[in-house]
Length: 179
Picture 1 (cartoon, helix red, strand yellow):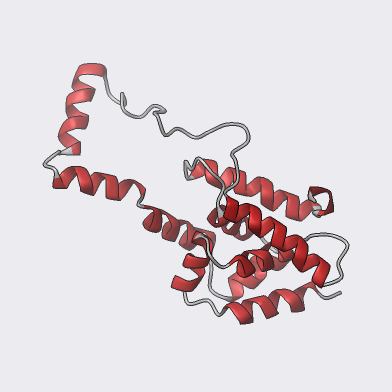
Picture 2 (cartoon, one colour):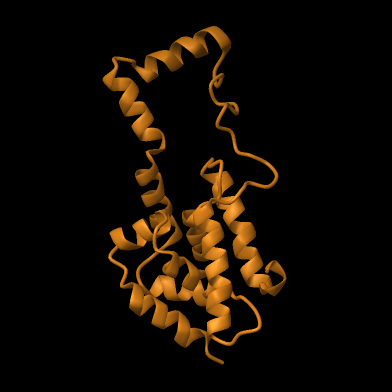
């Protein structure tokens, strides 16, 4: 199937890997595909998403909020009576300034990061969208259509929370994809 991807669509799949690394995720999910689509400027998908008010920065913030992110970890420790600033000061007094800044257990992965079943489904659905549109290749627009059609992953939650009109977004992609 990957051989049918245009160079732009391949860059989205590769970009999703990078987005997962940046967010320190151990799997590539639908949310990383959405971020990768938003990262590439001037494409069918990024233009359509932009028309619906989405930016990479806003979506990334939503993902961090929805997945808990570091702030919730800090809040949980504070609720247990642990003062993170005091812990940092104590560690830095013993081991030097920046002792806690190095890579830890959640450091960014290198190499291939596996795709979640939902992200794999998006890629499968992008092929189906291309076939339905009588296209010989899979474009970034087809990846976005597959993402919309999948409808269950974190990307769908973000789109829903942002009030995106999915039928209108789908139509924008279809219109932009016509030769």
